[in-house]
Length: 217
Ligand code: ADP
Ligand code: AMP
Image: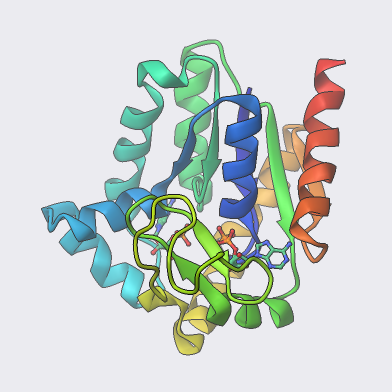
């Protein structure tokens, strides 16, 4: 099963993608996590990507597309995957579609996690991230057992540089201009499904599971 998570920054794509990956035993692939790992390791790609990320902009397609296509060509992706944060532009979606078409494959579901802009800034300022394992928490809505420490791996949590309110506002503008058109793109392919992302995160997950399991019935 090949699943794409759509939605504004902070809508809950990563939170849901991790739960989907666990339940359906498919890899969770987050281009944001891949960039952050590169930044942490001081690679050339990381240095280049950081300039755009800190400014709330998208990393150029030339740097992003090959990285993603290489990743989904890995052996662990043969039974599917859940993409979180890719595609973010129509050209990215077209490249993915062309690559899959050549293999006789397609995206099965594009799940739009719908959350209005008013809710996003509150979510982002409370988000805490683990750079070691990629887990994401919220100080109010999804707290860790011990404050500031990742439940999964025990590393210290951070507030992401790009989660500052002024950068979040820029990221929302970029989302509306460049990423939201993907909703129509996937709707025209008949694979779009929307869930109300303002609900409790377990209820959002239930709605997603109902969509995914309906296809297997
Ligand atoms: P995205 O991957 O779309 O940027 P995240 O999954 O990182 O978003 O979620 C953004 C923040 O909102 C995180 O702090 C997360 O714990 C919190 N969050 C996710 N889903 C919900 C929800 N349904 N209700 C409240 N907070 C949520
Ligand atoms: P995320 O972790 O998905 O919120 O992504 C954090 C940042 O990484 C984004 O604001 C972009 O700067 C960059 N990024 C992640 N995925 C992509 C993508 N598919 N295309 C362009 N930039 C991306």
